[in-house]
Image (cartoon, rainbow, N blue to C red; front, side, top):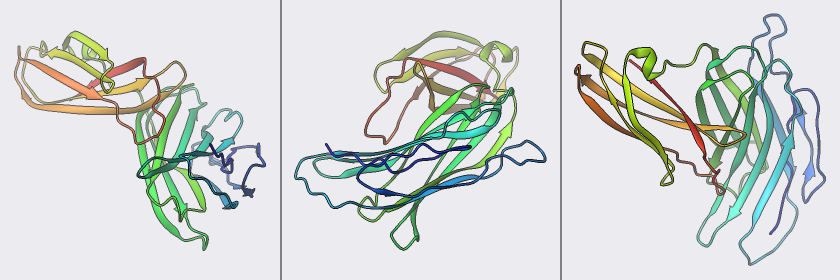
Length: 257
């Protein structure tokens, strides 16, 4: 197994690692000083590939610690991975975003730009999180399909919005039953009955998956023309292109109309 630790990001400081790559790191602030609100947060690491050769499948990593985000919404750490399989290579970056503020975020958006040796963006990745609570850490994998060409990566928070999380079924007057997390997927399955006393023109179920440390990407599904007294069976599965799948052990289920 070969490892490349080169993508090192900090909001207020840097922890570098001298591995198989020559490393340089630049950084920008992630918070507007006048308003205290987060703004575009971008950190980029140009790299020079080391010469290696191997006929065995391998995983190459780049880990960046950004320290404690403090009282901001910030990228806390990144880990770049190239995992060589039998027929293809999975490449991308794990990103940890910490909400170090005292209020929840209703929406957070991340964008990754992957560049070649000429500093040209050749591909990008994008993801968003619906509801990141105060003190929570969102962990997501932004992938690309150009492992031979990519020489550097930059990840930034490109949009965010404060706000309370979506309501629960109980908040909306709905009744849940037989909701459970299955190992297949993993998937949250369950049934919800419209006990609001009237029809709903639209209902959306949204889930966020968790393990013991992180909040991962979620899933959503919806139904239209949900009559009073009707019951809807829903399934929401976790999906990711990451070469190493997290051990999902919990979830947070919400609804919107």
